[in-house]
Amino acid sequence: MAKTAMRQRYHFMGPCGWINDPNGLIYYKGKYHFFYQFNPYSGFWSQMHWGHAVSDDLLHWEHLPVALAPSEIYDDHPQGGCFSGSAIEKDGDLYLVYTGTANNGNGFEQTQNVAVSVDGVHFSKCEGNPVIEPPEGVPHDFFRDPKVWEHEGLYYLVCGAQRDGRAQALLYRSKDLLHWEFFNVLFESRGEWGFMWECPDFFPLGDKWVFLCSPMGIGERTTVYFVGDFDYGTGSFTYTVTGEADWGFDFYAPQTFQDGNGRRIMVGWANGWDWMPFWKDWGPTWREGWCGSFAVPREVRMNDNLTLSIMPVDEISTLRSEMAVLPPTIRLGEESTTLRVGDGVAYELGFSIDLMQTDATSIHLNLRQHDDRALVVDFDLAHARMSVNRDKADEWSKGTSRSPLSVQGKEKLDVILLSDQSSMEIFVDGGRVVHSMNVFADNEHNGISMYAKNGDAVLVDVKGYGLDAV
Ligand code: DQQ
Image (cartoon, rainbow, N blue to C red; front, side, top):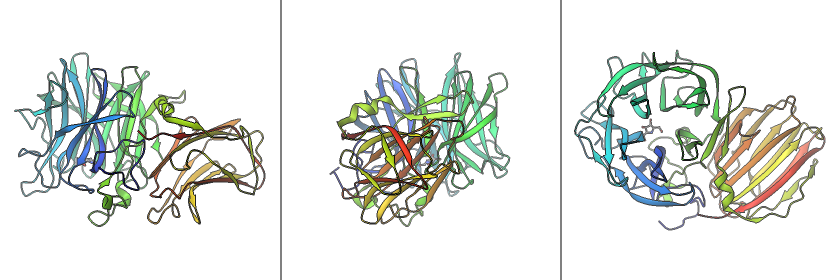
């Protein structure tokens, strides 16, 4: 479609229309494949198809024909269609396992289904669909988003469900991807983790396992992870550590996969349901004929204390164009310091707060600034927390995301900002804290300024680059 005012420059987007969750992310036969929830007909959510694109580098994408479209009695709900799921390679063929939604007069009836491709482009839905129906006690409209993997010749699948009004992750296993038996409730909420887990993911990292989901019913938490142990003998998971994959408002339904280099890569939908009052307003971009993009692909690593560090993949550095002329060290006071990085819209800016030389109680950044508009980032060093406020970022977005910030015992706190036409991603403390937000601002909103309160702040290793469009 034509380049419109808000289209992203280097983030993944659909060719047109609406996109939401990443689906079926896989490194298959030497290429990255992204599938995604896609409404090709307009810029709002309806009639879910699976869009499909391939890439060599996670940045430059070739769009392929739609992989799945609503067509069968089990996936032809006029609004719903082919909901989220995952991909796996078996005997060289590419299998998609997805939730079909149907309406036989009962609303969104959800079942798990399989499609297969020998060429990785054209998919046929399998004869035996649906391959899994909701078990007794699970409402048919709370049974979705299968994530599949293989272990020692058996296939495993976890999907989101609800029982007695509380979220559950159900574990199934299969010898052939087509015939599934229920294995166990992998993990469940007792109410504290919400009433449904959308897009659950479950994967090993080092000698631990990570359960990742977008929970419904626990306020501002958009994506939560749990780190613990899994037993293939019992099919049960227990966690000891939990955290937020992203504290911003626009990171939802992420999925991970392992690529050819063994990296665990996470990709999230760079939007959130909470700011879209259903059926009324789908945000500022649907009038341009599209809505939705993916956050930059991120690499997931485990820290010694079992928390996760989530950082942009290294490939992002290949987009760097001119290096900004910046002093490597900046001393901030109450007066505003302005910086110029790229065109102030698509850029990367990195620095470390030198905590040993900083006596200010807080540092404040105004990003995508123009007149009295800006996205405002506060590092409250005195109270060990940070926030991102977008109430004045554009004419439309609202809200402040807040997170803790660990400063105790640290000499430096590193910060990386990735800005694009309609998004800002902020990675702090080696990716232990991330805030991702949409900003629907035009090219005039290109100011970057910063100041400190109640003392001086010293930023070191300051580096910035314009980022090229893909
Ligand atoms: N989006 C899909 C569902 C999933 C939700 C529908 C999460 O499968 O639960 O588009 O954003």
